[in-house]
Amino acid sequence: MPFKPHGKHLIAGEWIAGSDTFESSPAHGPSHHYSVGTVDLVDRAVQAAEQAFETYSATSREQRAVFLETIADEIDARGADITEIGTQETGLPAGRLEGERGRTVGQLRLFADHIRKGDYLDRRHDAALPDRQPAPRPELVMVQRPIGPVAVFGASNFPLAFSTAGGDTAAALAAGCPVVVKGHSAHPGTGEIVAEAILAAVEKCGMPAGVFSLIQGGDRKVGAALVQHPLIKAVGFTGSLAGGRALFDLCAARPEPIPFFGELGSVNPMFVMPEALQARGEEIGRGWAGSLTMGAGQFCTNPGIALVIDGEAADRFIAAAADGLKQIDAQVMLTDGIAQAFCSGRDQIAQSSAARPVMVTEAEGRSASPALYETTAAEFLENPMLHHEVFGPLGLVVRAASAEEFEAIARGLEGQLTATLHIDEADIEAAQALRPILERKAGRLLVNGFPTGVEVSDTMVHGGPYPASTNFGATSVGTLSIRRFLRPVCYQNMPEALLPEDARG
Ligand code: NAP
Image 1 (cartoon, helix red, strand yellow):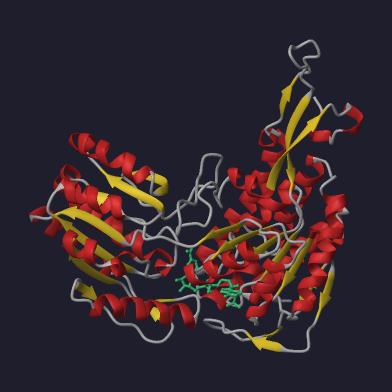
Image 2 (cartoon, rainbow, N blue to C red):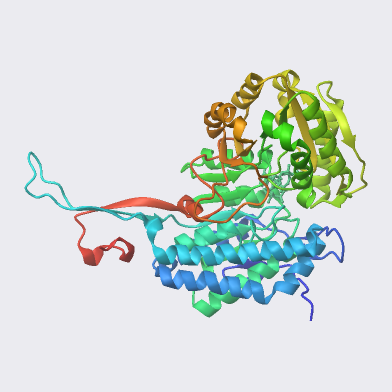
């Protein structure tokens, strides 16, 4: 039997229907009705999460690792149904959904391995020095401890890997924190079936029911109530700058402010250095066109801006990129709102006297087709509007007169998730001047590649200075992301029997 959503919230092990419903708006296939989230349900879910915290945070790392692996198995067991409803809701192709499911279960299993190893605890020990003069030193042990219930906002552009059982949820559960997810209304059915998989794992592993809840959206009050709930201790979010900033401000204004780990997007500039441009400009241009249009350009790591030194090689680069973009058909976007936002972002650039169209194709309704504009470094520096992300398949080429202009642009950039250098051997010296500037701007610096496609690993940093993220000390991808949901506790002169197991020597 194919999966048919019932449209309820999952609150601490119970499926609960609300009185109001909203209708999903799939890219294709049937729509369904889903219960609208309420402030009361938020309170119920968070109270249950707090209650679960005592037992869940006391589980062993091995128990939590098995729990994460069981969630992964349960998601895989529902793979075909997840792909079916996921493709209907988001318009993303089946291959993309299957790949994203692989990444989702892969990161759950990666966190299982990570917590088994225990390095993330960063356990430190200062032995007692009773005879030290002028004062003795007590025995000190420091270890990272889970913080309490965590709120997670599902992302529209990653219905699996950044949503219900995505990276934020996996990191929080691995750390020992219960999770309350606010589902994204762009894919409520995908959220429901993944929540079903998590519930099955909760039951199989004997975890407390409040360890996981999913509240569907449909009302802006849900997100606001969640981040303001006094028992929520941190928030993981991926989405727009406006939405993320509004929720960040609510977190900061609470009587007890809490960290808001928002990943808000970026234009991911790509500097094509002169020798590389001369030798491989066309190849880089074609590669850029592919990266820029992957998933209809709906990636936070989409390289929206390419910088080149003006001249004949720049012309060849632009022609090759335009040629590559012309081969790409219109693609359906994740939501009507995102398609409209793309059109208005593109129109703003089109109406600016600072940018000129290279190639613009039109698409209807919820679809988007590629667009390419160009400007000069001087115009770019004078027009902050050109620095903003247009979420979708739009590229802007900036023609610079000199390496100094590259540096001026790099210095003026806002915080970015990534910055890319395309270089050949003879570009290294010029790149040495840019690297320290870009390092202060971005969470990840790449050479001779494209930033779409984020490796989930121990070294990955998916974050960066504001507005790429609201917390430059953190990453939302990779094992380091667990640190967002931990805090260091120091135990002074505490007998071994009283220490938490992870703090014992
Ligand atoms: P969004 O509008 O920021 O929404 C993300 C989540 O936050 C949703 O659950 C939304 O609830 C909630 N939310 C937003 N503003 C809120 C507020 N003021 N109070 C309470 N809750 C709030 O992002 P989106 O829906 O994914 O897409 C819209 C735009 O975001 C896109 O056009 C794109 O520009 C950008 N985006 C960026 C990235 C990225 O990776 N950087 C990813 C996706 C989207 P509701 O569902 O109730 O609105």
